Length: 577
Image (cartoon, rainbow, N blue to C red; front, side, top):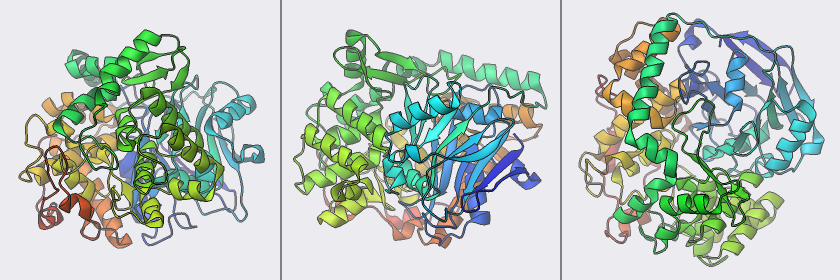
């Protein structure tokens, strides 16, 4: 992958560039932060002319390493005002790598409103005007694209929320059968794509003869096989295969960190009706299209996704994940899986992040727009987002805007972005990550849930160091293009990173060098945010989370800000993963 494609949405020019020597070492999240710091004015308007939307392949994206089909999408976030990388599964990323393309960079904005489709094949690159897609839901968009371009294409697209530049909008990517709809949901990147006048990207790799070049194929394949064997031997892999990410909901509820009724409690009385065991039970008993153990990218052996069916066995949504259950379910006082799955499906169709939207719904419920537990009312509100009503536009712009307009003080956001499914009062390591990560409130930037067995999540001691380690870990995996769920084997054998990078590129690195890549990514992101005026010291934990005890543990967030602000003053340990 030695090619970057630059698309100027104002002049409609498309340029193919060979990757510079300086850019070769960056991939995925690292390439996004590198390019933003180098080319994007940090103070620019997020949906204005000078921001850039970047689709970036991880360094190992064109290889056979399991889970390497993750795509990083980024730019200056409409929600946070800082750097944002959101990665997504689906099948399109693999097709981009088979075209030998490292990154797509969308620049400028159209002179007049447009509904364009970027088409790329080995023989052609062009922007097709497709006004017939304007306002279409995601499923409708995908169907029309298949009709025009064929079955074997890869797709990224936005729904009507992205076209209307709502800050809660995400970017969708289906699998080859259009069963699973995966989302780069966080940060409002769908609004950024909409600002470029781009409704969809179509990738046709069917005539491509691209093959990656290996410095040492045998060494690479040996390390790749080690990872597969280690994951297969891990009990966590089997658990995720059977129950998926909803498996953690029961524990989240037990320890009191499950967002409930706009983050007013950490436990939900109907948790047993929406946990991983219940999801699995309904999938098995209903049969039909329902399935567990589905991959989100080709070649993944963890296969933590699912297809959740209705009582007749017909798919409601794929995939139903913990975050979406917690924000659309318990956070809204909704304890029925069918309702939660339908809410998730509606978010997918109008093109909004289920986390951001669930948080916005919780705020609206606290304001009395509808009552907590009103599933039908919540469905109607999401439909209004797609219709672009005044209330729909408020909700579609996220929890912070919703709180401001409706006059609600208890708004669970940091840096303008909704807090995901781990209340930081009961999992203080995540509170540190939400506050100090350049990504804002995003669990994928360094999730401390795995420390529940080794640390007291209610005590502030040690949480800053834990978050630092977890943020480095996430930045590295996002730069390589690997799923966060492959981390356990690398914790025991971090030198395997060195073997993979040597086998692919011939880079002679030790663990310190590899972890130094992650540190450099965070340094670039923090520098961009500093210049953009969104450093962590200006966006602390919401006051209500510092003052209002969270039942059942009656904890508040009390990690001192001075400890978090000084987090990166001393260089972290780079000899372990």
